[in-house]
Length: 321
Length: 286
Image (cartoon, rainbow over all chains, first blue to last red; front, side, top):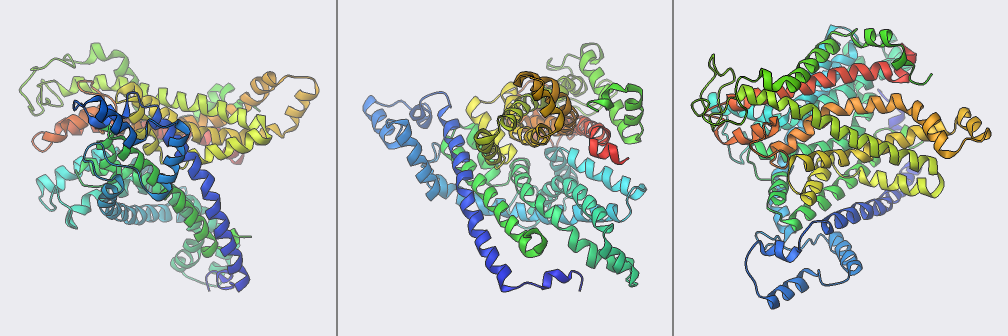
């Protein structure tokens, strides 16, 4: 039994966590309200008439102009616009794209699966690479192994992911021809996943190392050693299980990094996805799309962090106490 | 105890240079600074003059890093690019640090309702993934080098505010602040003479740790086409411009990217070491 207290879960503890979950979900509301208010305010600061931006230079009569203004709702008082923005955001309605004239939500839904694939691929590679470097460095701290692993981790944090992406394309797609440059198949996902994974691995490695060092100093590790377990078993069964908590905290932040990484990776690899869509929308001044993506990613980020908070309680009941 | 690490200079420098990584980092930073300052004397060609050589010509003795689509010498452009990287990084961190620290101190020192609301807003603002926040700000301000720097700077404010607030809260509860108040010191005096000097080591540490990321972040925005615009010889923008024909001329992206990587790595190496020395908790332990 690596972690005896994990098995000792009573129904009382579960009841507590249900109330805990509800409390946390309610706590999300003011946070979302503040972020969405910021987005609303920012969008109102955009210079120029939104109707002219929507028309993107097409000439139009005054009457049609008024009609467009009424459709966008920009002729109403600001407070009404604000409330209707919040109500629409809560329902996931962000209006139509200035460019394609299609509902923003539908456009985002069409691109989302590609970003999800990339995020999962990048996350797996980042986790495997980061955890390996971190555990190796943490088990043998302050020696040359540690220095090597941590320099590699720092390099990972310092690598411009757009550069490494272009290098990977050059070597593995153009010169060696092992994978296609473009496309949305599985083999076209490999290089983008590596690019995104490298971006995540550095921070994860540093965090895992510190967690392992901390855990290796605990009494239960000494006990495990004393009872004659092999070094491998001590690390795999006792140290790793307890060391996952701090890196898990970072998973919430990892999501922010994943989104940021996806923006860059999708652009480098010319992959479809939300990140590239956002950059395109900014360049084309397609504000409903910008607004929709920002609001949705923020909401996803907040909810993922709540989910992770709740997950701690399940993995490690010490957190609840 | 405040800023002791900064006052005892020889000790400080020798500890900073005690690690080979930090030495290498410091040397690279010195080289980059040298390139930035002496660019007009060191660059063999004009960074913006077309047709210095054949379009997309490979590396030769005359053109060490080859030539770009317009026949410009890439080596000269990379040298001039050094002017943007550190300058952009430092100015964005300065924006985040100044406004973040100010906000953090005001909120924590204000206490009560101001603190509760302020802390809530900061936490909410931290829910924007930084790059998303920066892109949103660029969308509002418009595309360009200065706006990108401003966006990166602003997107860092909540992070600095949160750390400063936490540090100020723990300081404000200490006896010396109470003592200063007892002898009749005003708010301004307490903040400037008692809180700020004690916050300085922490602020320096987080600013240094942030610098590498800030350099990378501004270059990233330029790469996305949201920051520096052609023909500016900014490294991220150079990579963006080379994207279309990189398979015919990989040198157009290898060298600007390498310069960016080395700069960020150097800043991170020094920042890591500096945080180890300046962080009071780490210092007391060693």
